[in-house]
Length: 240
Length: 80
Image (cartoon, rainbow over all chains, first blue to last red; front, top):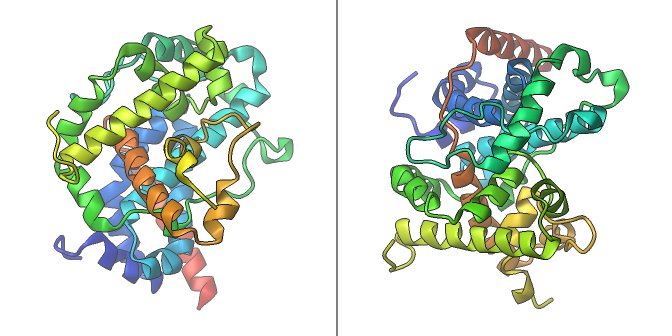
């Protein structure tokens, strides 16, 4: 299949049950999606399972996604993250004594220009690693109800259009440099929610900080990233 | 519904970061088609997408693709 085809054109073909188009989308985006879910989950098996589930879900939801004209890669990344943190929460629930599992590879730098692992993320990583060693033992079985029976996906109407995602993709290195400018406590709190799936109250407990402080840090971090994204995407005239 | 008070919450809500108590019920609200909030949630999705790309891309084992295509082909055949 031609490399020239836009992802949304491929998606339209997937919606018409074209397996080759799905295969092409997989080749294009699986490394991104797998990089994310492998970063979130404590075992390779779990990450591969989520990766497969997300693409199966894409197959079944392609008609509505295609009809809305929304970005397929945004759908993939958001749905994969949600599925991976749901799995992480289920693992945590099943193994409460294992601590708060978080990103797997604590010593691994993220994108060259992306967020580095924070101390807090490394803290949860060590819990994740101890969990990782027991993956087989704690791997949830359907009978135990730990595996989400139906994966939630992000409604297409909530997604950006392809052109907005193209703008982000074109300036990804610069955007991750900007995110790296976040003050450390804010970055830690943000990483714990983006990759650790923790809610603000859980982050407060994990970091040993008052809830109000964590709440403020998270809001400030998100506002910072949003403003940098707007600036870099050219929707805001601002210097970074 | 005045939605301005939600301005700083869209991203955190989408990330599932808000404590369950006190979190706005945005899903229902969005389901009713509030244009202001739909526009903001799409923008929030751009931010979440950007954050989700921070980890390095990684190559999954080829077995995953083979299993995926086998599963999809089975589904496609049964739908014919």
